[in-house]
Length: 160
Image 1 (tube, rainbow, N blue to C red):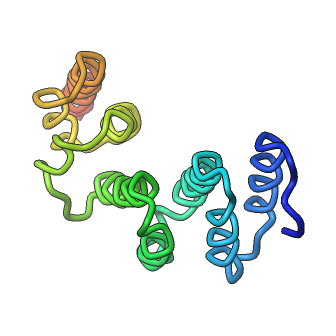
Image 2: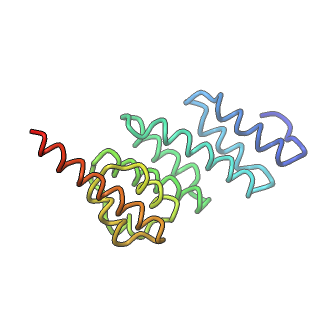
């Protein structure tokens, strides 16, 4: 990224394009560059958008853990971005059925709870959210998906 573009919308688009094209070895330097933008709100939004794309692409692979740790360090001074990395790490653990903490999920943001309720197959996670989801929508989705998984399991058992 050379001289800053004058309009924050143009800079945001340019940052997203740069993130889309960045080589993995240059990613954290680009994050640092973007976070030096004078419009901190826009810069952090661009970084969070990038975090979402990268985390979704990496979460199932062996590189996710190290990437998440490095990204958490890179955004340590930015509480919202740092929290989003932690949430992606929790989502990955739930999605991959690795150890995770039910209380942490129950206290997570609406964004994470909704993502888990809509995308994860874990009966335990769906039960936590059906009981303790932050919104009625989250609780209803988790309850519905949990029931659907139970019915599918019963139907497949009967088919044996």
